Image 1 (cartoon, helix red, strand yellow):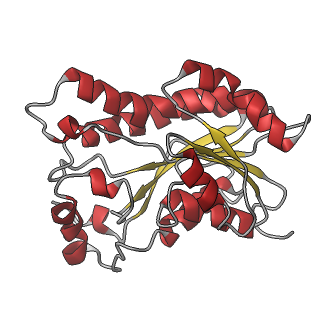
Image 2 (cartoon, rainbow, N blue to C red):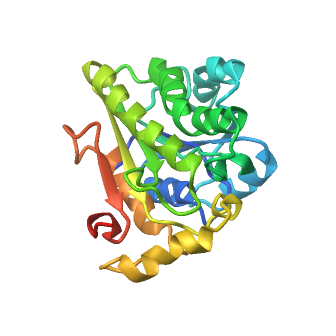
Image 3 (tube, rainbow, N blue to C red):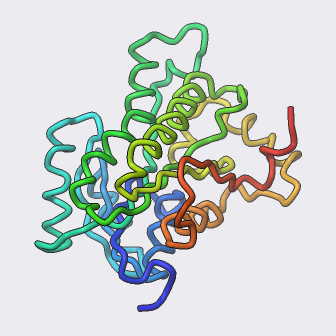
Length: 256
């Protein structure tokens, strides 16, 4: 099969519905020639059903990124699907969660904040290091962020968690460069996904894009962000690491 990911093997986390960026990244990756393995947490049967809607059904591995036993066994489980000579060429980190309390900046407890940072930021490091044994020839790690330079309305401690994610990406890029592993993020505009439903005041947050995106932005279209992910997974950016690529209709450049 031809395509910019021909022959590559990619692990994609965070596929929950067809409206997710992760689903579109997995779909486009397959269309571009990659073999894809998915992970799911909680509603595993739902992820397995969604996996059947990809161009080629992908296997699904259960993964709770806060569970060390899951992380320790991850490489072995991926190997069960990819064969004895299993190697990964790319990882898509599309994992974020904040308890409802994390969306009230002044009243949030450390328990809520700690959960948001653990799941949304630290997991980029723990997921990547869990997969490193399968990446002896290097590869590409791509995560998804929401521009942490701005104190967005209603986003509160999730914004802080995204800032931690962006910093984690830079340190990973620093430490893994010698292993030929590139680490980059896609900063996407808001998408009406399952995750968005958990953000109080999401409509107010998303309304910024209705007025400020110079090239326009479709709240229901995860495809542009998915294509950005696949671009960074490919070999077309061989010396790009520690970067944040904005796929947000240009809102990030418009200033306050």
